[in-house]
Length: 459
Image (cartoon, rainbow, N blue to C red; front, side, top):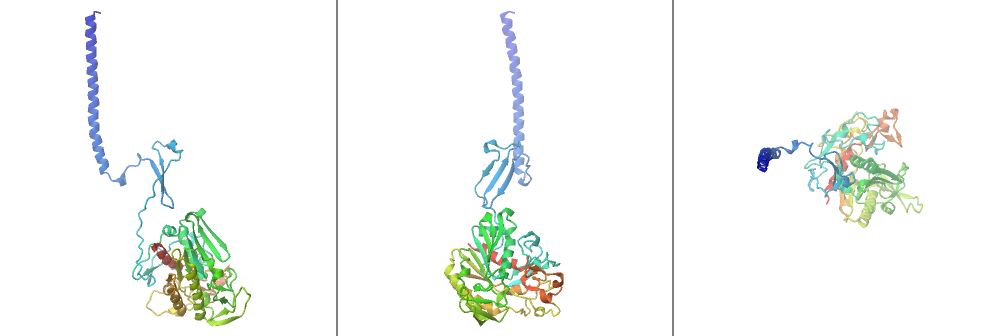
């Protein structure tokens, strides 16, 4: 081929190739313009689309774990199903503590009288827990398990007249108890309330993180995740007595030493919340046997002293111990007033009744005169002593509101001297009905709602 023709053919081929390139570039440019149009339209659509309906397929799977200190850890799974190997296969990203939006639980003003009000039937929020879900309840208080057929006693909520009790939130209470000790001190009614408190908080605690240990007069429910305890110390008279053995205290002649409290008191030190009571064991007789001397010296002679005189001596001894040994910057002190009995059904205009047996509803007419045998002199003494102490004491006046609850006792659905009542014994409520202690869930849960209100309200 001649050089001219060769150059001409090469030139034509190059022009054709250039034309082809221009064509391809044109197509690419057109596609780009069209894509930009779609992209802008899609961006606009996504921006306007509500997040509640956002497609999740394109998002990495995220599991969130909130620990007790509200630190959020996220475990991110890659979209292709593989974990980031640079994180060792278990990619955990620890973020800064996240402040959870606090639920409005409705803390009442300090000026509100929590103890004046009425009982309201509420089967939505009460009971706060179920009997069968709390394995720490003793046979003394598990009325349904023991054969009681009605359960309405669990559905009554206390409604203060001028405010409302806050919603119960176990985790909120546990946060307040973190690294702290809460201890009930007193008789079997305070033990009744202690069991209630355990049941109120235990449902949110993993099985491996809770335990109950009894050692003599002291029983300790430990919450490992919060480094907290809910304890009970048996001291039915607060001071020393011949009934201080928690297992063997069914003694006919009960004797007290009204000035001896140090033996018990050393177990109450370094506790953050102390809840005291003493009442029911004072009600067996009109006089109290007061020891001359001390149990430590083996003294056995005693004097018979009027109930209210001996009660005042004991509470003064207790008050002096609290004033001397309690640091108010650390410890909050509570005193529970008298838990009432319901022995005579004629007291609430039911002459055909037998003690508290077969009572299924509270006394709802709060304007009617009511006298169920409560010794109001002892309540007056307790209120006076606690009100005159150097250390602030929260006097929990549960007596009147509890007097309305004739329906809430364990009655014949309980144990006696450690043994379950037989069918024959249950058929004789005039002899065997326990109208002192309370079924759980039940009234002591309300007492603990009062404690809960004070504890979560404190700074």
